[in-house]
Length: 197
Image 1: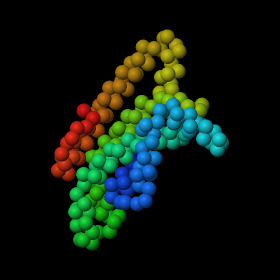
Image 2 (image 1 turned 90 degrees about the vertical axis):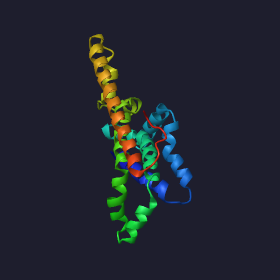
Image 3 (image 1 turned 180 degrees about the vertical axis):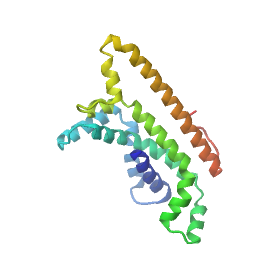
Image 4 (image 1 turned 135 degrees about the vertical axis):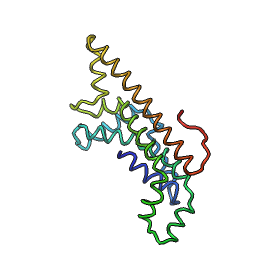
C-alpha cells in the first residue's frame, strides 16, 4: 500500500512535470530493480544498525517498500502516460482545482493501474525472503518461518504444501493485476503492446 502511494506520486511527477534532475531522480527510484537484493538487504542492515534502529517488522516494511516502489512507479507511469491531457485541461476550464481534478478525473482513470500496482507489490512483498531474513530481527515473517521449518524433516511436507498455495495465490493475484491493466488500457483507448501474461 505504501509503495503504491509513493508510486502514484512518483509516476505522476515523472509523466506530467518537467524539472531539473528528473532523469536522475527516476533512475534513483528505479535503482533497486537492477541491484541484487542481497546487496540492498545488507546495505539497509548496515545503515539501520549504524543509526541504532532496532530490527523489527517496521524495518522489514521499510525494506519491502524500497524493493516494491520501483515496480509501482513503472506500472503507474504507463497508466499516467496513457491519459489524455485534454481531460485534465477541460476540468480546469470548467472550474475544478488541481486537487479535485486529480481526485475526480485522474484517479478514476488510473484506478486499474493502481489496483494492478497494489496486487503486484503485494505479490512481490509476499515472496520476498532476503529482505525479511536480514531485517526482521527477532520477529517472525512468513518467508523466514518457512525457511526455518525446513530444518525439521517432519515439517517439510507441510511447508511444501504452503509453498504450493503461495505460488497459486501469486499466480491468481498476477492474473487479476493483468486483467485490470488491460481493462485500464481499454478504458483510455490505448493500444495493448503486451504485458505480464
